[in-house]
Image (cartoon, rainbow, N blue to C red; front, side, top):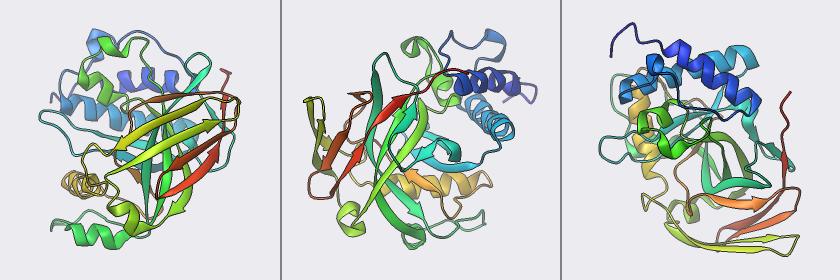
Length: 262
C-alpha cells in the first residue's frame, strides 16, 4: 500500500455518516480503497476518528474465517453496544435490520506476542458466551454497487451490537445449527433454521486472535466478539417487543427504537 494513501480523508467521511445515520454515495475516487490493505488502513482511521470524536473505545469485534481473497473483520465500538432494551439504531424504513449471533466475552487479554495463539489459549481467555444480535446499517446508499474493499473499510455494515443473556458455554461451543424463532408483539412471527457459516462458532475466534497478533494488536479483556450470523440479515418491526428463541440455547426479549439525526 502506498504510504500516501488518504485513509484519513475516507475515514472522516465515513465517521460523519456513522454519527449522523447518513447513507450516501461511494467514497470519492481519490480515497476509495482498491485492495484489502487500503481498506484496513481506512478501517483503522475510522476507529481513530470515531474514538476521538465520541470519546469511545473498541468494545468488540465481528469476524469470520475469511473466504479466499477477503477479510471478514471489523471493530465494534463500546458506545454502540447495548444489553438493555429498547435499543436505539438507524433503521431501514420502519424496520430494524439485525443478525442473530453468539457473542464471546473475553475475561483476559490476548496481547501481541511473538508466538502464535493456540485454540486452547483462546478458549482459556473466554469468560462467557451470550446470545447476541448484530445491528446492521451501511454508510453507503447502494451497498450492492460497492466493491468489497469499500465495505471492509466501512466495518462491514456494523452499526452496533445487542448482547442478550448468557448461555451455556459448552452447548454454545457446539451450536452449529439451531432454529431461531422471533415472535413479535404485533403478531408477526419470523422463523429461520440457523446455521453457522463456519460450522464451529469458535473457529473465527481462533482466526481473529492470530490476525490481530500478526498486526501487533490483540483482544482485550471485556471485549465481545461475534463470529457470524446464523441466518443472515433479518428485518424486524420497530417499537415492538420481540421474543427471540434460540432452540436449545436460550431466549431473550428486545425492542428497537429509531435514532434521529441531530
